[in-house]
Image (cartoon, rainbow, N blue to C red; front, top):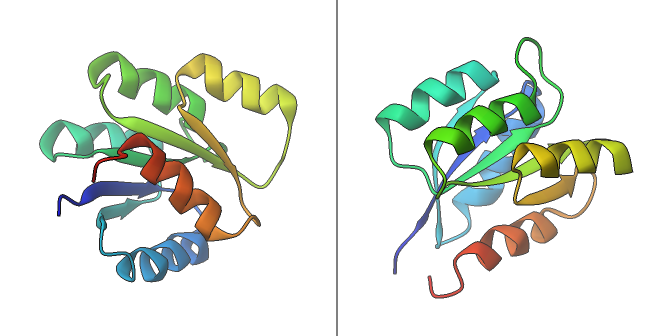
Length: 124
C-alpha cells in the first residue's frame, strides 16, 4: 500500500500534535513532518517528497494562502488543504484563489479532514 506523505504546517502546537496522533493511526498516511511557519514549508518541500500539505490559513510571517501560492508555483502536484478556525466565505475564496485544493475548518471531526486527503488519492 502506498502511503500519502503528509506535511502539517500550523503555528498552533496542540493542533499539530493532535494531527500527529491522529495520523499515526492511519495506515495510508505517513506524516513526514510538522512545521510552524509557511516559509519553512517552502524550504522543506524542496528537499523532501510530499503529497499533501495541511496548511494553516493564518500564521505569523507568511500566511497560508501566500505560502500555498508560492508552493503551487513550484510544486503543482502537491495538494493543499487550507485549515482555519473560521468558516469564512472570503477566506475560502482567498485560499482557493491561492491554489488550495480543499478547505478544512478546525473543530470539524478529523475524519472529515482524512476524507478530503483520501479523495486526492482514490487508488491508494
